[in-house]
Length: 128
Image 1 (cartoon, rainbow, N blue to C red):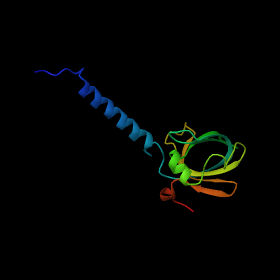
Image 2 (image 1 turned 45 degrees about the vertical axis):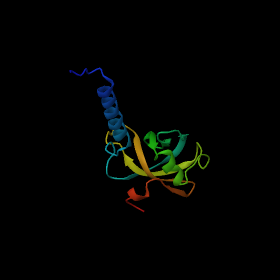
Image 3 (image 1 turned 30 degrees about the vertical axis):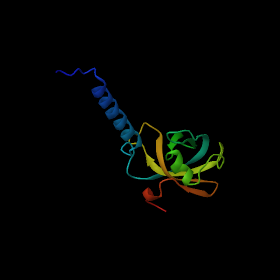
Image 4 (image 1 turned 120 degrees about the vertical axis):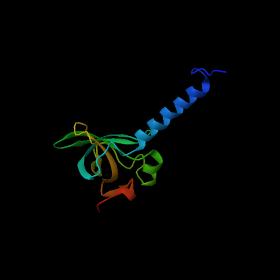
């Protein structure tokens, strides 16, 4: 008996593979440089929405950067929760910038707002 490619089993398998591949690409660090850098600026916008809270940080000389934090639970565990920072606050971000130098994007491992340090990924911090 021949099996049709339009049967639900192959379609479900393909869909699962696409979802797993997408999740891996989204949650990995392969898009970021290994070296960590500091970014200083002013918070212009905060989004605590899944899949990852983000900040828009305006720097004095390099424009606005997208700073990605950890997933909502990880970010919350660091103490960075809604209301602890707001637009206009100065911020220092330690993290890994995008491999694409045309993209102003960074994955934060630590942020400092108003003298308070939030270690998003403490196990990844390479400097104190």
